[in-house]
Length: 426
Image 1 (cartoon, rainbow, N blue to C red):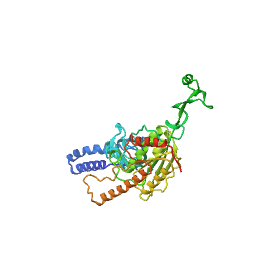
Image 2 (cartoon, rainbow, N blue to C red; image 1 turned 90 degrees about the vertical axis):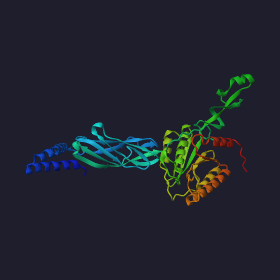
Image 3 (cartoon, rainbow, N blue to C red; image 1 turned 30 degrees about the horizontal axis):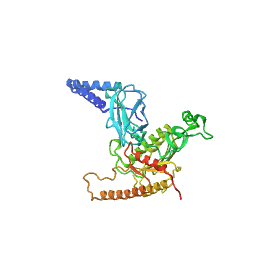
């Protein structure tokens, strides 16, 4: 059980004071008593300032759910500070978590307030922070309590929502809540045209200026205000490259998760229904939904994505989506089964867009030997990948590298025009 124990400084003071006074009395040397006098004072003050009660220590985080780059503070709570003069905290280092102070060691006097340790996660995921050792010191540095080990706290780090926006409309909206214009006529506010009155039309739709000018009743037709069913397919099978957090180089999984978070936030804020399918070892599926609570659910699911070396791509992606859905496949496209499953989605009638999140993962660094075995393997893998993407584009599936804002503008415009072309089925 942790209790107050004398510090080495108090032990030395007591020994020097006892030795100096005893030597001066036995040998009759007053100078030894004079030299030992300061140590007598230190020993007496240290012994007199011993705390009588053992305090209880608890460390709490201000926030347990953050985005990449944000920060939180671990605050220490002590139930009894009687006799305590100084507090020292030493926090353990965590992967992809920056601490302030840099090495996680901080101390201060109790009169100045209990010291805090700030944590700033630099990469999405679940992080364990707050594992530390705390020591309390009494007045005159005579007694020390601890070090007391404190348990770690779980911190959920959501992906950073990169700035993303698009003015393109979703090709085939299907619903009745969002802002996208529909190709179907209905009760909305977007003007479609004016036509002669027909039985069953509402009287409030009559446009009197045109009716008086032509002598016949005319009504205004509008487009239905509909939302779109948007699916995000996230490839979490492998993580190619080394992640440096938001401050360094991004791996393929970093680009994939952050791009999915940006697309999810954009579509949810515009009123669309968004679903998520994570293709990984611990794959997850979030059905279509909308609203702020649904956005938090999507971000939390993305933060739990894990890769595993033995995980294999599925032969078929079962979204349960209709033919009018829009599917964004976010993947570096390095596995043939996943490319085959994407082609199956395209044949099912959905509007599929492949967002390439490979980035510079297979690019050889400057000055590297191009004839070295790793460079040759990366070049061969890139050639095979480019061949898969060409075959996928031949089926009518556009492939767009992720570039942030405006990435999908041109592609969505093209898909919207393609959706209006009449289809001839044999």
